[in-house]
Image (cartoon, rainbow, N blue to C red; front, top):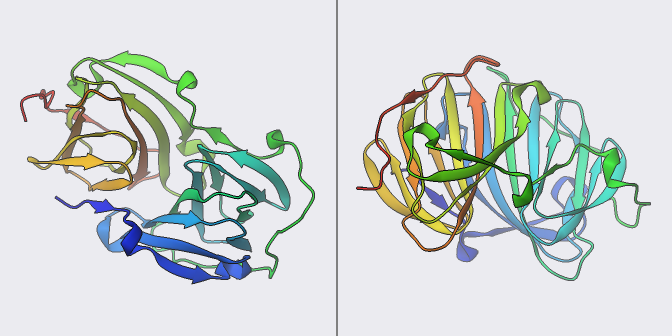
Length: 273
């Protein structure tokens, strides 16, 4: 199975990213060759105190900055706020952004990038690390909170076992590319997201905490925190929590045709795999 795990020994140091302060340590989990939709990359990073990514803009691609824990100062279109993890901020085409760790602890961070078909990665750096700038109210930015209290209970998700708590944090209308959705979910012990297939959407499951058994195209492996599993067009997949602890995950979807979705449930709750 194609899985990628963020590992301390696999992190590379990047200094002055986009003109940012200090350095960060990052790992490319997946690039465009992993997908058939216009998904460019999935990156994992640890931003130490005093490190960050400088103020910059993309005109042909969109990013999703996701703070998994701790906190950081995030700039969006020139406005800077403190964001407490976990939270996601969409950086749509033409919107400038930056991130800076103003705390005394490491901040775990994910970055996703999507373009339109045929699009490429582009960047304009502004030479501004956004250090020591005035802070504004958090409600001035589009922030999607990854809070468990916001999740809604559902049963039999994709024909799965038990209950799953989930919500759509961002939908396809929130983006300008073929980004389909950003979802947040909790899978309690003994529950599962049933085996299913999409022919018009590619997904990536990112395990935020806990562990479980992921099945992709009839291959089952154990997955745990900071694991990213891509599910390609037409591929079958699902997730079972066989442990005694809650499993928390992000699910990202990118459409082959903007706003077009499909699903085929395969009547397997994966509890016997």
